[in-house]
Image (cartoon, rainbow, N blue to C red; front, side, top):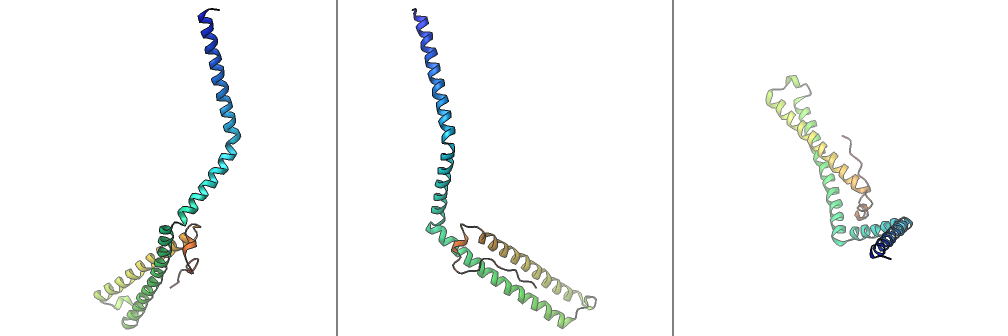
Amino acid sequence: MSETTKLIKYVVFFSLLVGAVSIISVGLGIITLPWHTVTAQVDSGHEIIEQTYEADNAIYNYEWFKTQYEDIKAQERKIQTTKNQIDEFKSVYGTNMSEWDTPTKQTYSQLQTTYTGQKGYYENLVADYNARSQMANRNIFKDGLPMSVDKMMW
């Protein structure tokens, strides 16, 4: 047998060997895919739990809920105060705006603008609190605070 023939046989054999190994590798990959998926999910779950219960994260979330809840309550009091100011203003100046002079109308307009802004800010505070309350990795740190905040109606 000539050297060229031997070389061709080695090249063919090596090519078949590489092809067989590739096919076996793909086959094993397909067979082990479900196992890889399950183990990846389990590993991911462990990482989430570790990150969630990390001390800094627990403290941050507890403080966030406590602060947000107190901010909501403070905003409710501010809104009620502004509403009382509007009611008092109307009792002093009446409800017929056409009888008011320009400075009185401007003062009333400022009160209304303040009231509207406070209510909008309040809506955002409540929405943020309620959204985070629905997140499983955050709501566990609320320590006795309500699950959600019901919006006040004025």
